[in-house]
Image (tube, rainbow, N blue to C red):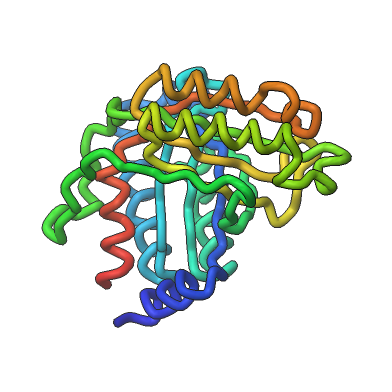
Length: 258
């Protein structure tokens, strides 16, 4: 086991990992480059990021493409390392030129968390075939969305009075009951929560809710903003698709096996 993978295992066991939440995209100037320049800059960038992954024991890398891009913000990323050093090195490398000159960057450090009072069973659909060592992540394929599911990105700030709420309060009980019903009816695939280490003015945490259909995503989003829960939360929601998940899973395999 390499030092990076040892740190990753310890962080996973202890819950001490650091998560980089990244709102990213490409600036319009990228599209003015020739195809040759784009390819060369992309390959140099991938090689650099893979070196960081191996050195610091990348634990998780997952991208999501927004269905409705917000100006230069086009994708949302979850990048997890066992230490702050790995997260810092990743951010610095990602912004390094020449590739870094053409990116939109907004980074937030977070920790994995649980949503108290909401325990739902996630029943995953069949997982894609696991990457094999022969699939070298240096070789960049044509990147595509995974259209088998939808992801609801929920950015939330708890408002005054929320801390005093009890899980047994009638409104909270009904809110949880409705979410559990949607999870069962629409086959919830995943529910993950990340809390910012440095809360922002309009959001303190982000949830990833994955469902197999628009109907499920719409139902979940409606309940999350319904009264009475809406009295205590400021919520912004975006729909997204997973971005080339099989390819980016190879990055984690490469970091663990080196």
